Length: 367
Image (tube, rainbow, N blue to C red; front, side, top):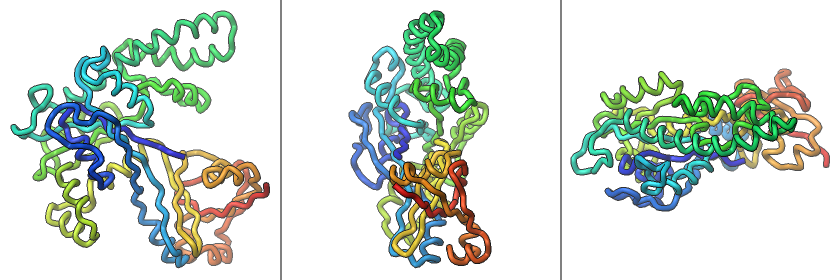
């Protein structure tokens, strides 16, 4: 099960520098000119989770297998992208394929780095990108809804279901609001909504790229973004891409910690972005643990035990019998599965059980 976040923004805001640091590679060319990222670069990163080390310690596991998140570095967008300006068409096609948007905003002054709009104004930049995405969605939806309306009027049930989701989304776009403002709460309608693949229907995390001196506290620019994010109901993370690039070069954890301590930081901004991206996608983690490995698995919030079993292997879901479940806290308190069983903390759960974040599970199946 793969989940990915597209890193987007105007040219020269630090997207590729951030991507390089995220993946600890130099796959994306970071250069001081627009469109230095021509093809989307993809990198997978481990999701930091201290619980894995605890499980490894309890079960004397030979290795740890963290869950992962995928990041896609997408070419910079400029004003007029919805009409094909710059690399607009390619940008829109690439972003349509991701699950969530990490929107990098420049929140620092530097006369040596050109700003495509001529001045630093992160709120304006966010609005520029959002407007282009809304215009593209509006054009897309106005074309798609016409044949759906005709089929619905003719009595087609499937088209009526689509119309129930498309109509409020289109209305929001016509009113200058992103499609996500019309995200349905009904699970069945939500499936239809996601299949629309609307650019502004995707969840957004704003990343404020600040100068090194502002990495711990932020600055006036990042404060403006935080206020905007709060009004929209979106999340916001402050990082310094320059610092993250330096940290990525330090392979020793002790050296990383010492470097961060000198800057007044408790953890890397990248870790905060990864965790925030994970939450943004509505993801949670369950574990399998034993002498061979302590393994973290990604799941969507609210899935059932058989569905979770299917993440490990499709045979597990098809032949699901039951799941033996221990909450992470109980697993730690009882020092493993045997202790949990002895203390009555190991539960036998069936097909309707809704998985919880941190569940340590053993699936029983028969194919």
